Image 1 (cartoon, helix red, strand yellow):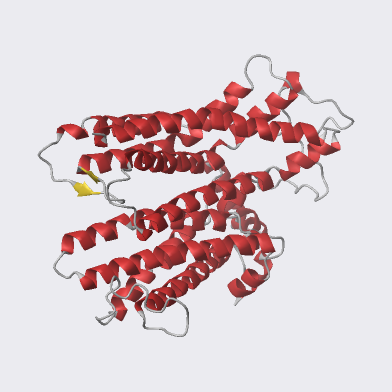
Image 2: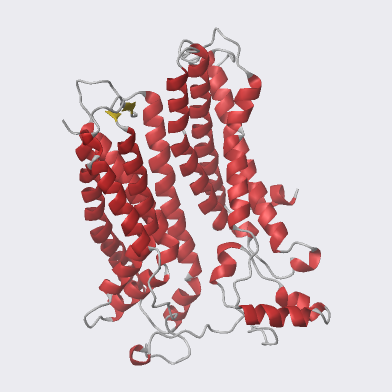
Length: 445
């Protein structure tokens, strides 16, 4: 009941994100049901049915990734003062977040089932009754257990993923955890200080040591840049937040995986004796091409935070001004939050560009299911990136308010935001084109 009340009481923007999750779940569920319909109508072709089911894993992963991003930015499940006193601690808030995600995905699965039955002709009274009866095996009975199993994949996987990622964690050093446990032996004080919030909100908020007095709610955040770059103003305790100067450690691993994927794709065209694997849209390639594409996508996703951090360092290099310094520091501080979704978007765009380059107008046309799958993957990854950007904007809202109180003009903040977007586009745009051209080489000719 609490999950339902938090769902209905959210703002319109939050409801829109949940509706997008439901639509993505509906599209993925419809693709899975179409795979089931193909398997029913072609019982002798087990390999093609299994291959179609395997291609549905990509939209499924994109949908789960998007649902996780929406759950991380859901304000209804963030820690609030007084909730622990009524028994709604971090663990129950994580359960509420997972339940809300499951409800959104279940709504999408129900829509997918209704639309599938409508196209089969099982439901009448609406336009396009039975429009795809031949393709969806309307002459054969639909196995209900198999259909419900396929429709339950998205809600179950999405809710389990959200619960695992947003589980309560204690990121304090071992000495601080031992001190909190020692306080906990002496009553409610220790139990209160030992509590930790969950998810992205808890990881990015300020930590409070046991015995340290809590800051008042109206206190101005104390933030600094560097000693030589203090912003002038009447209140010297407020400026920009300090950021971690160390680059994410995943950059070398991401570059290594990306290079391995490109190497596998470069040697894939030498496997002339290997059986071809049909790709969406009527193309054919060897299994090595698919492995190379997968490694390339993983490499871009892993290297995204490191490349974003590097982009921020380059922006503020060589005697930066206020705008460049602000843009670079924000990119460095938000590298982990927006870097990985940006890498995933680059991987999807490079794959789509490669498929567009290989498309032959005289060959087989791209079917509606392939188009739906491409729209799902690109839409979910793009929406995930936009959701991460919204999360980053909310995370630095206190810093933005402090800058405005210091007298910083709003045009400077907008210029810094435009500079960040331009710098990311200048770095990731050519990289995406290069990876796409190299990915298409094994299939050209």
